[in-house]
Image (cartoon, rainbow, N blue to C red; front, side, top):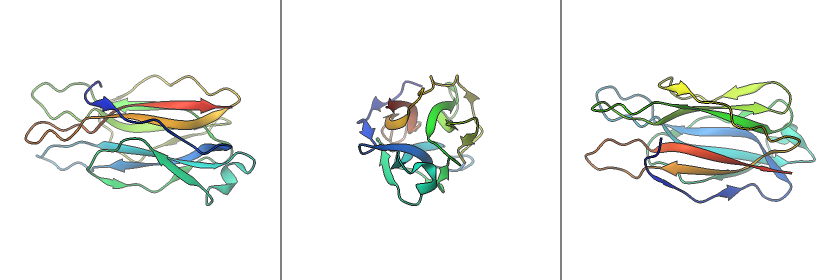
Length: 163
């Protein structure tokens, strides 16, 4: 979705690639104003050690919405995050808009990881794959709190590849 504005670009330290992620999620609140996905945090590991060093990571994130709590880290069995797919709920008109709701990543190899967020909306297309590289940066589009209006928080994300 296109509500909000793009935050700052955040990059893994030199020589590190994202091998895991966690999400900031507001769980469904029923009759209130849901926002669902509020933030994405990438966990960067040393390229020479790979995903096996996930306990020795540096976290990066772009702008983050104010609602929800961070989920546990999901990490690749080996290698790095190489592509992503975002789940987005379309505009609801007079209903409760949530925009971005969940994300999936592929790891080098064939396996993929799906976030622990809501099931609202539809999965978009897979991003281009970081060929021979890994994801090493993130930038998010966040809608600021609307006061008495309909809040959405995270609307879109860009990932960056490094070699």
